[in-house]
Structure formats: structure tokens, C-alpha cells
Image 1 (tube, rainbow over the protein chains, first blue to last red):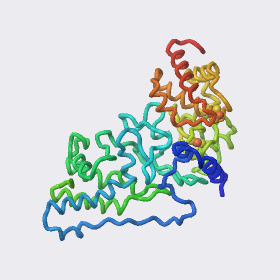
Image 2: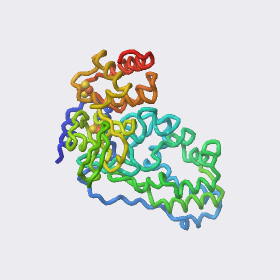
Image 3: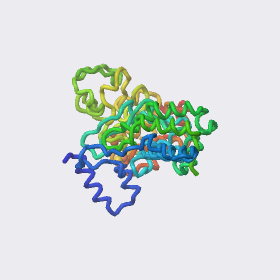
Image 4: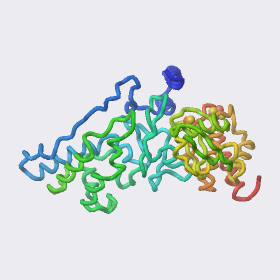
Length: 222
Length: 158
Ligand code: FES
Ligand code: FES
């Protein structure tokens, strides 16, 4: 066992009666952090293919079902953590507040003096001797704009926001598809670095679902 | 692998693996031990140094990503205007308790003042939240940053 892990154990024991906040500040590890003794194999969470929705005869209902399937990715913590309700990212599969506390500001890259790139590089950075296996990274590494916050919205709310040029960065539906299906930072969700569970399916499968949703009228669930 | 680093204005040739964190190159290879190890996972701020004036956590900065960027550590921050004011304010306010976190605190404070010479309380909180102090010097840190900002604005103090 490494020195750091021993240290963390001691801290955890000594913090057992402390507050949740103190424990989080010290460790910052939610359920998203992998158990170091667990096997490395990635958990596979498949997405249904577009073809599996062809039995839904009514186009609007099919569109809503396609979006709901694609939303397994959209609502995954790998995506939601950087679409928070405020300007502070969350982390881990339990989507706890980012440690250290970060105000990404209007720019989405952090306040002047401490920015995302103070810790996040252009690639995931593996860490040795820690329960936190890696620091995530991609270029650019930034928070979604405030108009694109997802946490706290219903699926229908997220869907309507995606379609609304006033909130989606003035994108057409073709541009939304291109962003979701090919964007590098979106793609990070399937290559999130050691110790993090990837988003369901693959970016290609996700893109196909989004394309089919748009083709069927981009209907939104309630 | 060989890397040529520009640290505090001096060129250092080092022979290390590319994924070695900058922190360990600074401390163990170059011998600049003012920069501290606290957590190794970007959560405490003790290892903060500047790359081209921007605060970064040296514990999660692989040396192969540094390139030609100018590395500034606590040993040389006093040569900058902001660093000198921050160090003086730290002494005046008697910020330090055990001192372990303070290299990182000062490096973050200097980076803040370099881009935001008159920070509000919220600006200070936003930037300094990433630097943890087990001794609880938190109330004195913003007071010292405010003093340094005032002295920077008025040109006094150095
Ligand atoms: S040692 Fe680098 S942030 Fe704690
Ligand atoms: S002064 Fe002791 S940890 Fe900050």
C-alpha cells in the first residue's frame, strides 16, 4: 500500500466523526472514484440501436423514444458534471461539488488567477499511488455556457434547450448533431481516463440516435 | 528522456521520464524544495507554481508538457512586483502558522494579483479556494491579499 493510500486511510478514520464537507475536501472522491482493488475491466452499458425503435409506428412517439435513449448519455455524469445548474462543476458519479471549489465564471474556463488548466491538461493525466486514478483532461477543457446548464432540468427541459437557438449557442439542428456526434470534448465522455466510468455506448451510436431523433422531428418528452 | 527547463530564469537540463510530475523534478532533481507536496492529486494547492505566469499544480503537471514555458517557483516569486508585495503583506499580517501550505498560498495570491490587481472578496475566495491550509490561516490570507493589492495600487511597500 502506498504512503498516500495509508495517509488517506488514517485521515478517513480520523475524520469518521467529522462532517461530510470536511471529508469531501480532504478526499474529493465520490462513488465515481474506482476502488483500487477492483478489476480494470470497463463496465459496458450499451445503447439501443436506431433499428430497435422501428417498431414504434407513430413518428412523434418514436422521436421521443430515440431522444430518451440518447439521453442516457446526456444525463450521464460524464456529461452532466460540466453542465451544472450554476457555474461550479460537479464530479464523480454522485455528482458532488468539484473539489477544489471552482467558479468557472462566464468564460467557462475559470476565474482570473485559477483556471481549469491549472490542473486539467490536454489529455487525461494518470496519477500514481492514489485512489483518484487520473485527472481528466481534453482541449479545450471548459464548462458549458450558463444557458446550457442541464442539472435540475427534466429530460423534456434539456431537449427543448438543445433545440432553442437562444440557449444552444445559436446552433441549427445540423450543428447540434455535428457537435454531439463529433466534438472532441463530447467524445472525452467515452475516454474519461482511469478510474472513471465511460458514458454508455459509443459516440458513434449516440450520434446515430441523435440523427434519428432529428430526422423524426426532434420531438421532446414531457 | 532529457528535458530543458527554464526555472526561475535559469536553464536546467534534466534526465527524467516524461510523465514525472514537475513537482518532483523541481524538488528532487533541481533541488528547489520550497514547493511542497500535499496531496499529489490537485486538491490542496501546496505544489502551486507558475507556468508563464499562470498558476498550475506541479503535482499533476507532467514534465513533458512544460516545454519552453517559464517556470516560476516560490524561490523566485519575490522578484516580481506582485510576489514581493504578497510576501511583505504575508509578513505584516503574520499569515503563516506551520508554513507548509504557504508556498502554494503565496503563488496563488501572486497569480491572482497579476491578472486582477484589485480583487473583490469573491474574486479572492474563487481563486484561493483551491489552496487548503490545515492550520486554518484562512482569515489572514484575504486580509494580506487586500493589503498587497492596496500597496500595489499606491506603489508603496516594496
Ligand atoms: S500537492 Fe499538488 S495540489 Fe496538493
Ligand atoms: S500554515 Fe500550516 S498548513 Fe497552512
